[in-house]
Image (cartoon, rainbow, N blue to C red):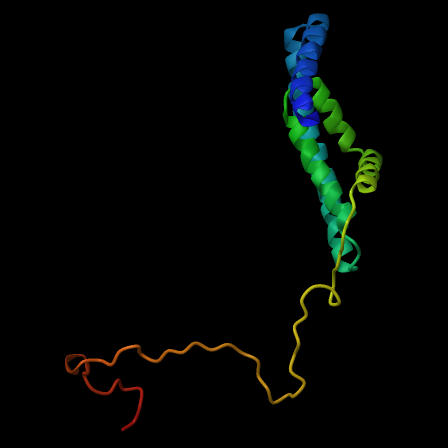
Length: 165
């Protein structure tokens, strides 16, 4: 139900802000602000996204829990979508999500409300592949390529040249 209310409230807020700001500063300055926030927001999103990707790589490299860097990356992606959406309210929320302290606060707020049942990572977690202990054993797969039917007399044309008689 709250999602439905959000889909109704956000456009109404945007329309009210467009009317108020457009009435105060005029049509063209209002449109210029909307376009500039999209351009500036895209540049900021790229910079923050690159930082989040480096933090994610570092987290994977050190075998740390990647939850927070992944959440930051998702919030940066969401902020980019908000900044590309025309409107003052969505721009405000989009710019707010580009601030690392705001993202951390949102992450901790969401983490307090989500219960993780299990989390495994690295060689101890997940399915393990048992390697043979004997060095003479080679692990592999095979496919049976025997013919399902025998060739008829007309199909046999003699040796293929790959074998000796």
